[in-house]
Length: 152
Image (cartoon, rainbow, N blue to C red; front, side):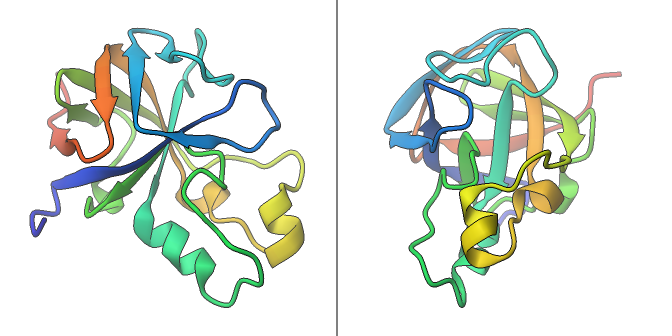
């Protein structure tokens, strides 16, 4: 896609327990005010869903001595083609009927993940995007992601 306000869902990743590697799935149910059904990070808080751009994953692949894949940074959605610099706190993105509101940019890492220990860096603290589910529904790999305007 050439429109920087749009992208596609490249991967959906979940884990049943916190602190474990996420695995990729083809589709997921996003539940309003909760997150992704079956994901350990879902719940009543501001970081229900995490997003990372495919370009961030690819940047980490360069020079890495281990395979790096979508979900390895514990992100739920790996998005291709969307300009992540447009995603500010309060902006909403839409994937079919699902609506996510951006609540946080980046995060503090309390412990070093496997990627950091092996590669010496992790992109999620700098480039990860977090949000909460405003409206739920099903999302599949290949679905279009659109930036919505902030509701005032």
